[in-house]
Amino acid sequence: MTVAPVLVILSAATALGLYLGLLYLRGDRKQGLVALHMLLGFGGLETLVMLLHGTPDGAATTDSVSFGKIAAGLFAVSAFSGFIAALARRSPVGANVLLGAHVTVGLAGFALLLAWVSGT
Figure (cartoon, rainbow, N blue to C red):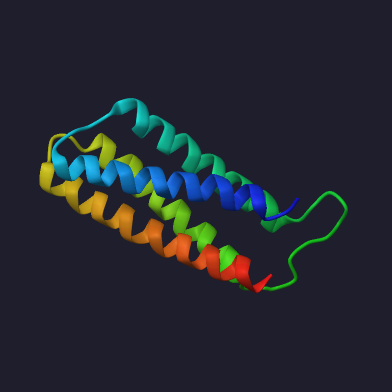
């Protein structure tokens, strides 16, 4: 497995997330795009974890701690905080804090993914 599918899926999730952030700041919310963002994010995380475990021909990453593994952890934290933010409708302040954490951690994970991809 190459890095290209992971990079394409997570780049699409990031671009869609930035667009959704712009819509959120304008006061608009599109549930269909939120669902697509969530599916792309979880799919990208899954393909990243599959890539980190190695390919069917036995080629695996040899680094014990790499930017890819840290990026996968950050994406998992970002997915969890985004999912909880979507459920936290009773407390708008808490939802906004979680959404800010989701964006910050997700962009940090994407930056580490790009650093990992450029180093391989």
